[in-house]
Length: 388
Image (tube, rainbow, N blue to C red; front, side, top):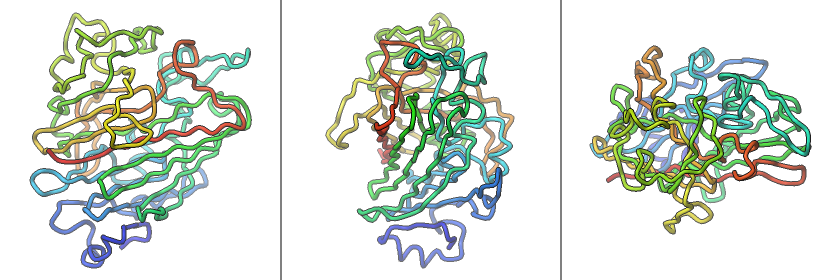
């Protein structure tokens, strides 16, 4: 097996029987190859890391952008489906038109109006990369960086990878030297747990998030419009034409933004007379989470549940964050080809990003995103998979 392959103790026998193959025999899993990710860029080495639990669920990660590159979960037909978009080599990621397939984005995930914010009476000008605003930390944000990576087994015996990055004072306009780590852990309950930890030597703002495109069909040949989704939120943050929040928190009731009961993603997306969907050309908005708990995850509330009847796959998202950005993939154009020849077609991948609110530094009524010296930023998010 490859040197970066971690397996739980319960999967040791499986590791022996699968030695020499490129996937788990009989399950349909086609692992990305380590050799395709062994590349040096910007003076640092890009690598691939593979985690597997005792159920055969497998996640592959690369330290380029601290991103999830593949995520194989059980489906109702007995096979495994890779439910995330991605590419099959480091070069493909480096050259991709869409830089947000699977990475951690930041320092500030989502948008900041005009790339400006004021902190302690001083105005900061960030780099801008979308319509005069900053999106996902700018062109040189976390998603473009090669992180330091350490693979290990945690105290509970679960396989994990910790990614660490130093974001220097002034990068993309942000103040302070920021040290951030992101730890991915795969549990026996088929959960991908993402824990963030960060400190700074000067006051700054921070809002990292995981920006994965999910498709529970296991292929972008089928639209995510059929996914049935629940978002546990009574409100959302309306935006202007550039998708910058106005500062209002509006009720979802009586609108196409109401996902409090399971609804097909594509059922109302083309509602022509609803301005938020017209401005976003579909869903690309932040929901204000109710912080509803179901008793299963200490310190985290359930944010959303997605179910695809065609595969039986259920994904539940738990987080300690106040918001969830849902993007329905309407900007995809079918011009890029990913893993296994998958064409990235329109509305064939959804992003569900746990976060603070977009442009929060410029709205006093939004949760604070300020991090100061002596404080530690943490975020705990879980993507849990099961079958129905």
